[in-house]
Image 1: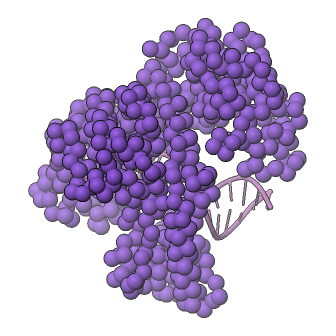
Image 2: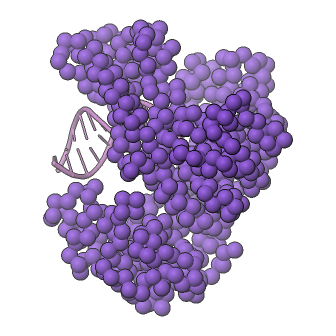
Image 3: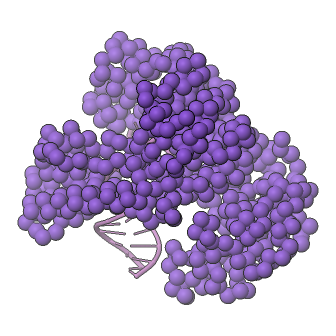
Length: 605
DNA sequence: GGATAAAGCGCG
DNA sequence: AAAGCGCGCTTTATCC
């Protein structure tokens, strides 16, 4: 599929734009093309000839961050055809730890210093008192010559990097190079489609949360004998804790400064009414001040278009920003009412609204969620090929933590199941004994004992761990089945299992997006992926096609997976209203078993 | 007044 | 010897 030698005809293109978001109407005002022949073309305001270049199927196009430039070029009537290459993807595959801006990538891989335009532009921005955040919007106001030099300079660096890196990346990462480039148009469509937002619901939830915050602030100010209390100040929280007399009972310390921690875990264990009020206020403050205000800030015509970056993480997972849609609170994910009720009487108060209610499904559509269950434990089973783990995972209906608990403790008692789960996850995450002890509410020696029990049960795990440590010591990186290299320093060997499991899982799930496109979108063009939440792919489908698509979607996610030592079953959920109403759908003989009345209630034909 | 570190917290 | 992993975002506190 991928040739090891450079293509014969290629052009690097860079656009200068008046902003970063096509959905806000931003578009290019200048562009540059540098051909492999050495020919340089620069456009400003008038893009004569650019359309023909972009439309040439036989001319490979090279970008630094292709998703951005391709979207922008389409905005001025120059859709990009033919093969697209992205040097930023090359850099990310070569070493995921390093910075991904053009300047630092050039310094890393090119022999000569990049031109000093970057510093010149920064000087100009400073001289004109432009804030860092407004830098992008002010490129248009740069002195024309400076802008032209910058645009040509960036495009020249891009083509030089392509020359230098293409042969290395094509040879070292054939699978991932293909996979990541296939994602460019798919992710672009995901971002442009976006999520519909219920602004009325956002407003109501904020109003409610602000009254909760106000109430808690009054309550704390009263205790402090003061007019104000700042809920977000750990300093004031500690003063409150001292006055209320529970600060000495806090055992958890902050990481850097070793002060008594005011985090939820510390406050939760206290069973003190003032601590409970603090917890409530802090939660309300985060829900309103982070999640809801982010949605309001980035909504355009009731739609949020989160930025999705396939090169945004060390592990290979996506990152999401403006707003981040990968950390929207689940119902009951934060404080539960029962937890606080025993400390303060909150009768008649809804503790927290469900933020996922805000994310609506477009009328006439449904959302399908499909997630690979137990993904990271499965990856551990694959790499270790452990008899016990593979045995348990071979039957998807098994409760893995109950099964492991049975083998470790000869019991599936709830408390013991929690312990074995904590040790398994602790292992996957590289936790120390102290953290495991805290998780199981036990002593350090308990933690040591549980760890030893798991190592006896699955001797392949410590063996795998030491193999990874050896590879890190000998060559500086570990490599997943997809061929992704994860660089780690010997002092970071404890993270190796996590990086392998998280990284392999991430590549496994995200490479299902091209499969969905080839096998399903070709047949159902209205099907549109919206989000990849690590082990989950969310898509929008027309209501009248839900029943038909659902089994195929699950089947494609399962069948097109790479081959592992264990099956990776996919579970499916559907909603036609909002993210909060997601309903899991069971399958029998490859057909969905709809819950009683579900189809009628959701207008599914 | 802007930039940055630290703490805190949501998700998988 | 010791180490929960990966993110993005907000606020406070502090520095220049």
